[in-house]
Structure formats: C-alpha cells, structure tokens
Image 1 (spheres, protein in one colour):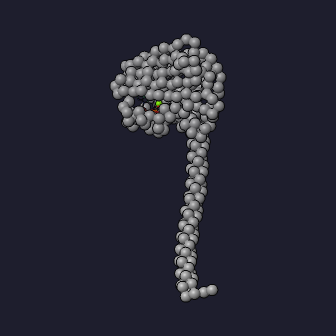
Image 2 (cartoon, helix red, strand yellow; image 1 turned 60 degrees about the vertical axis):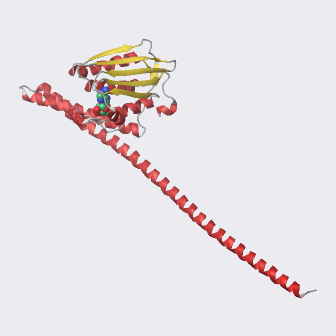
Image 3 (spheres, rainbow, N blue to C red; image 1 turned 180 degrees about the vertical axis):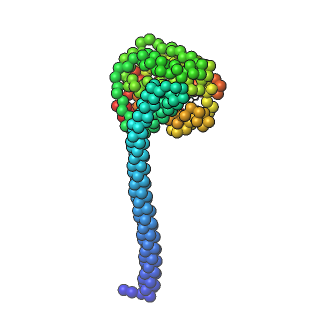
Length: 295
Ligand SMILES: Nc1ncnc2c1ncn2[C@@H]1O[C@H](COP(=O)(O)OP(=O)(O)O)[C@@H](O)[C@H]1O
Ligand SMILES: [Mg+2]
C-alpha cells in the first residue's frame, strides 16, 4: 500500500542514504590517501635506514683500513730507520777527528726520536683497530715502578729535577701486562720529566680497597689549564704547539696511555693547575681486566 505521504518518505530515505554513501566514500578516499602517505613515509624511512647502515659500514671499513695502513706504514718505516741508526752509531764509534762523530751522534739522537714517534703511531693505530695485544701474568708493581723510574732518570736530571717512589709494600702478584704497565708509567714519567724544571716527580702506589690498586705520578711542574686538560686525551694534539715543536711531541702519548689503562681494566684521571703541577691517577684491578676489557 502506498500513499502520497509514503512517496515522500522514500525520497527522503534515498537522499539520506545517498548523503551517507557520499560521506562514507569521502572518508574512505581520505583513509586511502592517508595510508598512501603513511606507506610512502615508511618507505622513505626504510631507505634512510638502509642508507645510514651502508654509511656506517663504509665508515667502519675506512677507519679499519686507515688503522691498518698506519700500522703497516709505521712497521715499514722502522726497518730502514733502524739501519740508519745502526750505521750512524758505527760511524760515531769508528771515526776519528772531531766533527764526524759529533754529527753521527746527532743522527743517532734524531733517529731515536723518529723511532719513538713511529712506535707511538704504531701503538696508537694498533690500539685504535683493537690489535694491541695484552700478555697477562702476575706482576710485581714495585719492580715495574723501579724500572720505569730508572729509565726516566736521565730525562728528569736534564731539567734538574728529582724522582721519588712512595710504594706500599705488598703490591705483588697483581694480574697485568708488565710491558704495557711500564709503557703507561714511562709515558707519564716522560711527560712529567719534560714539563718539570727544578722540581720533584713522585710515583706513588698503594692498595685501593680489596679489589684495586692506585698508581699516581705527581709532578711539581708547569701544570695545565682547563682547556689544555680538556684536549689532553685527544690524539695528535700536543697541548702546547710551540713546546710540542721543541720536544718533538706528537700528542699521542696520553691517548695511548688512556687506551692501555682501559684495556688493563682501569681508569685514568688527571688533576692539574698552572704553575703548581700535575697529578695523574691510574686505578687498576688487582685481578686484571675482565675478558671484554682486555679485547
Ligand atoms: N705532566 C704534565 N705537565 C704539563 N703538561 C703536560 C703533562 N703531561 C702532558 N702535558 C701536556 O699534554 C700534551 C699531550 O701529552 P702527550 O699526549 O703525552 O703528548 P706529547 O708528550 O707527545 O706531547 C703535552 O704536549 C703537554 O703539553
Ligand atoms: Mg707524552
């Protein structure tokens, strides 16, 4: 049964339905365009991640290649240099007269300086590429300290300074690498020797609780200010360029020292004040480094 009024109702319903359909279609279109946008963004993000990963791999590869190149180069340089030093030593010993042996000795001294520098670059690049190997064994810390001081004494005397050791007895049989520990001490002692005139350089060693021991190299030298301290562990950054030239320094010593200390499972801290001196504190574990630290 239909009526006039019923026809209007149907028309109204149809219009409502049509409006709803239009609204739904609009919503669907919006949803589709939004998901397309989202999908595009996701794609962009994915390709950015892939690019980044590739860049990271390239950087890693470059840095490893650079490390290897430096290590190889340093190694290759050492061989002829050792020959030069050897022959200059022979000339210095054999020749008669005044000038020739003097000049030959200059070659020997310069040669040793260059050799030390090359060794530093070699150590640094090895440490950077994780190739510095440790040989862990029981170590008598007082003996290592004594040996290191004995090696540093001539440098210290050159600037009319003195050395002193304050070593707690009983620091024996810690686990460490004696060669690397001595290298740390020699680096610190040679710095103190270089920058201390008419002063005192003290090496202290003591137990630090049951697990650690502490070695300190304290000097009464020229010290460093805040900005010098901040750059101290950066490679190839002799803190003071002018003196760097005079002492043929590369600014690698402290970077290598810090690397070795970390590998030995320890930490290093430097306190310094201009004109008052410098204290370097190295804390190390009695039982040696954990596996991850040593690698
Ligand atoms: N004990 C110290 N007293 C004063 N200055 C120091 C001392 N140790 C290091 N420095 C400064 O820090 C710089 C970096 O030291 P280092 O890394 O050992 O490099 P290098 O000895 O080859 O210059 C040195 O050039 C020096 O200026
Ligand atoms: Mg140094």
